[in-house]
Each structure stands twice: as C-alpha cells, then as structure tokens.
Image 1 (cartoon, one colour):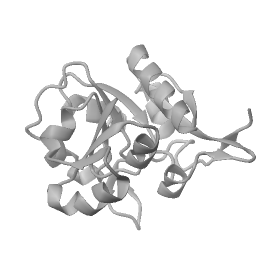
Image 2: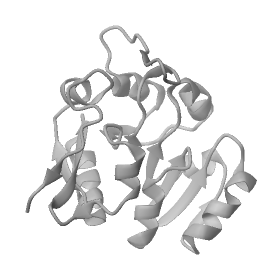
Image 3: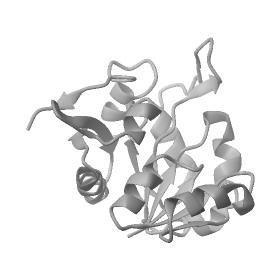
Length: 196
C-alpha cells in the first residue's frame, strides 16, 4: 500500500518496516524531509502535500492550528482513507487549551474539511513514544483506539495497524468513539496493553 503523510509522522516508520511505500510531506517542503526519507530507506520519499494526499491511505498528523493550511487546496479524496491523528489543542501546551468546536468532535470537524475522505480517528490517544516503539511487549500489544463512520475504512485501518503489531479497538462512530478519544475524553493519553 502507498501511504502518504501530511506532517511527517511516526507511523511512517511502522509502514516502511512492513513493506509499504511512504510519501512524506510537511509545510516546509520536501527538502526538509530528505534526511528522514534517507533514514527510512528506499520505500520512503519526500514530496509535496498534494502528492502525499494522493496516496491510497493518508495520515494527517499536524498540529491543530495548522490543519486548515495543511488541507487547503487539496483535491477531493474520492473515498480514500484519511487517518486523523490530530488533537484539538487550541494552542501548544502548557497550559492545555482545547479548541471549542461546539457539538462536533475533533474528527467530525476534520472530516468536514476533507472533501470525499473516509476519516478514521486513530493514534491520537497515544503519546509519541508509544507510537514510535515496537507495539509488541512481553506483557501484550499496545492498544490502539480507533473510530470512524465507514465500516470498510475502519477494517482497513484495523488490519493495517494489527499488522504493525498494535491491538486495535473499534469504538464506533466519529461522534461517539471520537468523543471518548479526543482531548478531555476518558481515553485520551491512556496507555494500555492487550494480553493475547
């Protein structure tokens, strides 16, 4: 599978390690990612956000205030999957300030900006150190919560992340599951292992 990143993400390391092609992008341009692409090896390439957004599956991993700029001008996704790994920090902590989205969850808001995307919320509840590390531990596999409104998209993300070694747990829709996972929700920042 070809996986694109909007915001150079830790998920790319898992993807490359499991034989997926990765196209990396950020707001500073491909040259700023050349070192990371070299480090990840021949399956990784630095590119523009437009090129990354054209991949089969896209990971959105930018800071909340950068989302509008990161997705502005991207063509419609045409049913492709976007993993939303963002958290709705109104400004960088500390102190933690959560963006006021009214009744919407963070991922419902993100989905409204991504025309034609099948959005799956994932990776946002974990601190980076738990995403970067091997998710398989002696005591079990790292639990990865996810939510989305499209069952097939969630199955794709569950299968992909399970292959990476995570233990995916489907929490339902972007409204119900997303609310549990987002900042201020009971699962935000939770590190848990599943014993097999």
